[in-house]
Image (cartoon, rainbow over all chains, first blue to last red; front, top):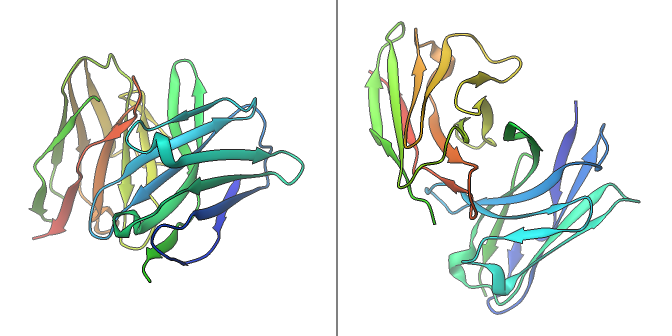
Length: 120
Length: 107
């Protein structure tokens, strides 16, 4: 069973760049879409975007100008960078694996999540 | 963006009750809808994908139905471990969007 684990700083200063990594174990990073989703305190889930093994990316338009995702197959990990953060970016950030093999579309594996707080 | 509206936002139910949660899309999404369960402090867990397919390992008391704009998650007999928040997710068009969640609480 594939396992995902987020890592990165838990505290980021306003206007700086949030950087997170998701390490994939017990499974290959090939042939899937690797996703970031976040959840502000006490609120619902927001899809940030995903990167395919091929390197193709799709981002949520609400965050597109500030988001960059990358993937390192040699390390079996993928990353998220979110620039110019504000307090509104404070959230638990989840990485997840997206299955997209017609007709199956779903997020079937998730990391436990990492709390990121934006504060000076 | 496609808006996903869940109802109710919360409900109180007893063990053994039949529970139904509805998700309505602002436009047709065929059957590209999934349901996720989230417990406090945990990551969401996939229950159902493509409207009605049960994820491996998920109890058969969970079922999904619908198409187009209206979808339903049913728990046939609520168990103590089912008290959680449930989210629908449309996977039909970008940006992917979740419903606001339905919190199932103990009566």
